[in-house]
Image 1 (spheres, one colour):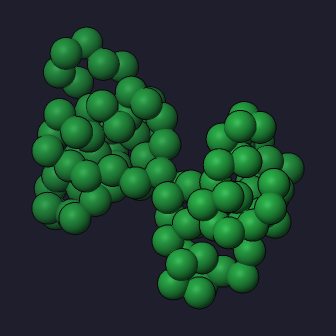
Image 2 (cartoon, rainbow, N blue to C red):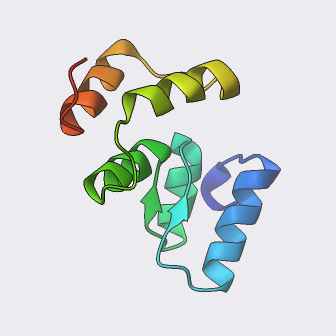
Length: 94
């Protein structure tokens, strides 16, 4: 990737496909992946943003249990302060 950014194969493939099909956005959480996607002119969303949008659209009743599942099943690491902010944004108590 340009600018010395090192990405894993999945990130490279996601960014390349999104650029190829002229996607509106690409789902990517890692900071370096977001930087590379932005450099390619792509809008990025992370899983937390997707969860908040799903809650706002009433596709999810609650974000908290999904965060718990992500932590327990997928080893998705989320700091306590970020978790608190996400839950607050979702209208859920931390």
